Length: 67
Image (cartoon, rainbow, N blue to C red):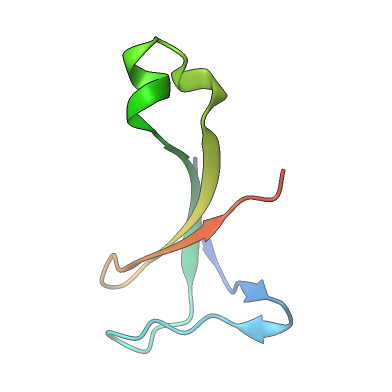
């Protein structure tokens, strides 16, 4: 997890927080758990999401990782 807030561009569009209009975000990855994988103990197999968190108000953008 990176706590270094910076400007983020997705598909050449600058992210702007829809709540406070701030333009600096920090990044983290989050597992998108499914009930089946969790039930069988395969959480490691779940897909990841990229989260960009507003450095001002903590609003969270979620983007499905293509990794």
